[in-house]
Amino acid sequence: MSLISLHPLKRMLPPLGRFSGVSVRHLGSRSYPNLRVTRLQDYNSSALWKMNGTRLTVTFVTPEGQKKTVRCNEGDSLLEIAHANNIDLEGACEASLACSTCHVILDENIYDQLEEPSDEENDMLDLAFGLTETSRLGCQVRMCKDMDGMTVYLPSATRNMAVDGFKPKPH
Image (tube, rainbow, N blue to C red):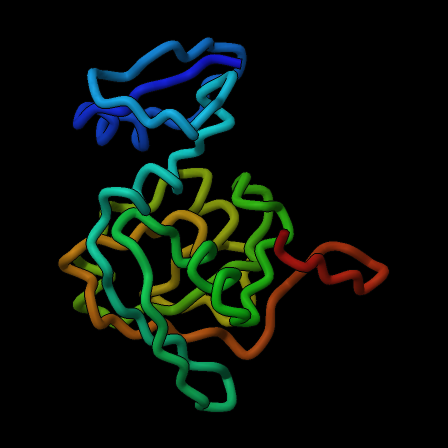
């Protein structure tokens, strides 16, 4: 295991994703003696955002109309936020763009602020139950300051291709 130091440049790491097998010796001049990792993948991008991010709020609305407003960090995906707050948003493929079970519906003003969905996301959205003009996959939408206070609507159903009805729990 290597002792690492953290530096303001660590803010650059979240967009880079995970790198397996890359040794980390230091990331700057400030030491954190209790923080030990062996690979960058052990120190995930979400954790980095949580160290530097701004606290935001998002309201989830269930198909029954129940609202739950939660706090989150800048950079968290809607799927991560839902799982962290026991909101029933499935995410069967664990954010690998292989399903549409984290389908959410956004207000038009928020939808218009986002980058266009990738081709892969659009392919999965085509399989989503109750698709709308402002549908996105929750795993692909990351919170930013401009989205603070937004409302996310959960569809009345999801289309999971698992035939046994198994619904995975977030871990």
